[in-house]
Image (cartoon, rainbow, N blue to C red; front, side, top):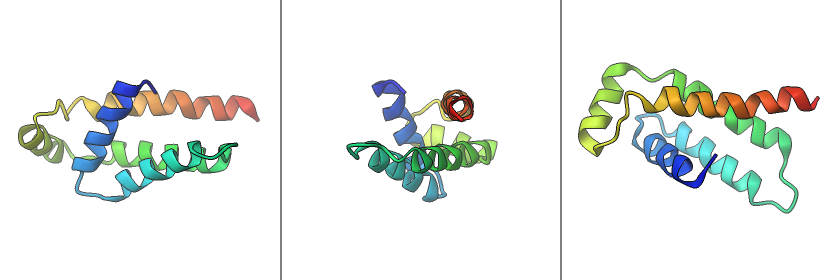
Length: 94
């Protein structure tokens, strides 16, 4: 994920009512911070993030968009697609 995309994902996950999304992003960051990243930890964090993004209600996203000035209603779909692309690479690596 490019730096700006990661920053926007961080903003969105931080704004959600469910703190587990931001925790999953922290887990992902921690896994990548290791000299040899733990592929299972990376995959698990990406799966958690994708599920959390998919589970967001439109009303919650509208509220976040209004409060934070983010295009929140489109962000879960865009970031979910990027995360899904990354997860697909794990399936091909087996």
